Amino acid sequence: MAIAGNTDYKNEWLRNNKERINLVVDKGMKDVIKSHAEQKNQSVNEYINQAINEAIETDSVPPANGGE
Image (tube, rainbow, N blue to C red; front, side, top):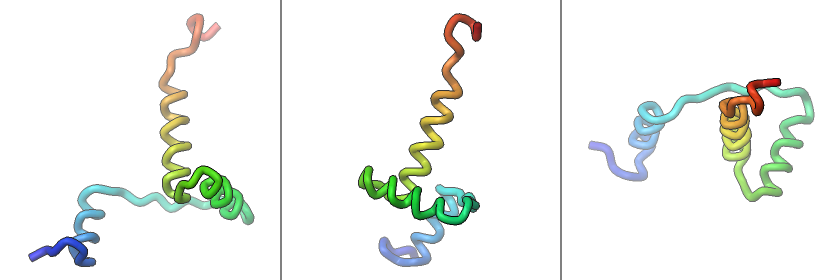
């Protein structure tokens, strides 16, 4: 039986609801990303997810004037 707060329960929830991506960046970039995230009171994960979501949203907007 799974109990809230139990490691097995948390791991099962993560397996069923989330996916992992390994991200490789240039030396020193991790600290830059972490610093920017802290300035926005976000975790590195939140910061990267926000950046990805904003890029996807921007890319999904049709070009103005038919791309001309």
